[in-house]
Length: 321
Ligand SMILES: [Zn+2]
Image 1 (tube, rainbow, N blue to C red):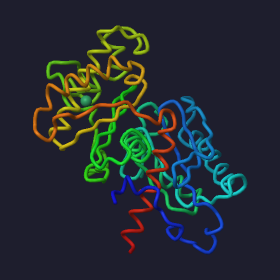
Image 2 (tube, rainbow, N blue to C red):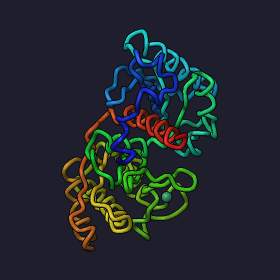
Image 3 (cartoon, protein in one colour):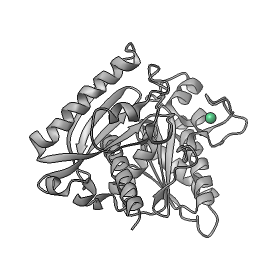
C-alpha cells in the first residue's frame, strides 16, 4: 500500500508503549504554521479533527516570544488529548510555510520575519516526549488531499496551493517526493512566461510571479479578491501551463488545487486551466489529465500537518523493522 493511502493504518504498537496506549486512542498533534496564523490541533488515525486552537502570528513579537505563544497551544492540546478526548498524543506533525530545512529543522516563513532559520523541530521536541516530524505546508496539503480529499486513493498526483504564494507537492508511486533538501514540488518557480514578470526568487516569469495573489495585485493594481474575468482566466491558463508540464514530465493525470486565489476564482479559473492542459497534454499517458478543486477546505492545514506526523511515524517504524 502506498504511504499516502496507508496513513490511517498506524498501529497501536507503533506508538511505542503498547500496554499504556492500548486503552487510549493514538492521536497526532498537528501544528500548522502559516503566514498570518498558527493552529494546533488533535487528529486521529482516520483524519478526524478532535480539537483545534488558533493564534495570530503577531508581527511585533520576537522569535522566542512568538514561539512561546505556539508553545502554550501545544502544551494545552497535548493535555487535552487525554483530558477531553480519551486519547494520547503519539506523534507531532508540523506543516510550515517555507522555506524550511528538512523536517522543519529550521523554518524561515517569508511572512514571519521574526523566524529566520528558527530551530522549530528542536524547540517543539523540547516540549514533548514523542517523535516530531515536519514538512512544507504545501506538501502537507498534498498529503491531506491524497489521504482524505480530492486525490483520495490516487498514487500519482500533484497537490497545489495557489494563494498569496504558489506551492505544491508531488505524490509519485504512492510516495511524496522530498528531493535533496525536502523542497521537491516547488511548482511556484516553474517558468510559465519566459518574458514575464520578475519573481521574488530572481528569475523571470515563474508561476508565482504570474499567478500568486501577490503577483496579481502587482500586475493589476487591485487585490486578488477583486479580479476581472480576464485575470481569472489568465491565472488559470498560467497554472494550466505549469500543471501540463508536470503531467507530461511525471506521468500524472491529476492536479488538486486549493488556496484562496484558485478557489476564489472558482470555475472560471479551473475551466481556463483545464483548456490549457487539454491543449498541452497530448501524450498517450498524459491525455485526459484533470485539474480539480481541493475538497478539505480550511481543514487541510491541520489534517496535512497530522499526515506529516503519521507519515514520519510510518517511515520510522518501517525503517526499524
Ligand atoms: Zn521564482
